[in-house]
Image 1 (cartoon, rainbow over the protein chains, first blue to last red):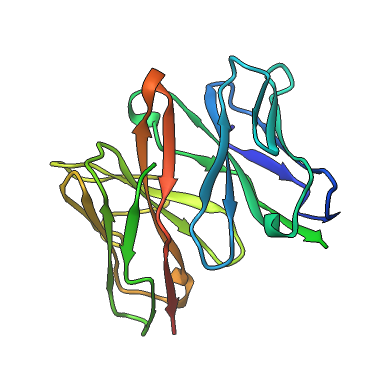
Image 2 (spheres, each protein chain N blue to C red):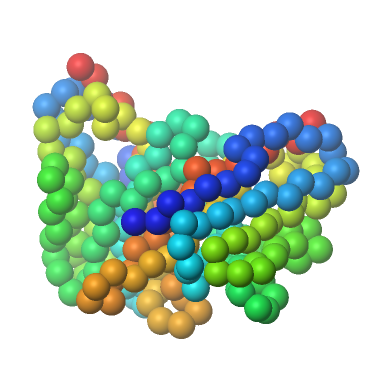
Length: 115
Length: 117
């Protein structure tokens, strides 16, 4: 019940296109859903995060869509650029007390944006 | 944001030895965590580093293998003991901060890349 399933495993997009990565979770107690971007040799960097009280959050070219009833959330990268080529991880955690910081990660998506 | 540094950034170790990884945060944080990222894999939580008390370990991780210290609110160490090649991973320190409005944000350090021969 702690799993977060991420797809696709890899994604190739042309420059200027839209990249879409999907995640599904099982634990309805999860209420914090961040996305991380990781470049080779670096630690994950927080990209954008959402809570279940909103269905969408946008920051620049990055948008999270959240469907609470389906227990799914997705990352959309608009106008994808070669510099966006990285591994993207979705994650989820529960709020409250000892649950903070205990993220369950998806399997990761390797995004390649061709010029 | 949070500025997190880790030492060493990478190391190559012989099996049977131990390595201590340091994590330093730019300001005080209540909650610090250690994660592991095995080659080509996702991240898995090892333990929560508690200041003033013993670390809390996740299922599959034990104190004898991964002893953790948290002497103050800006520093923690993780030791990988009696290493085997299966311990070859990236070890990451992580902290949680709260912004205005009670919104939590979780940050990760750059990681320590460990190769055990």
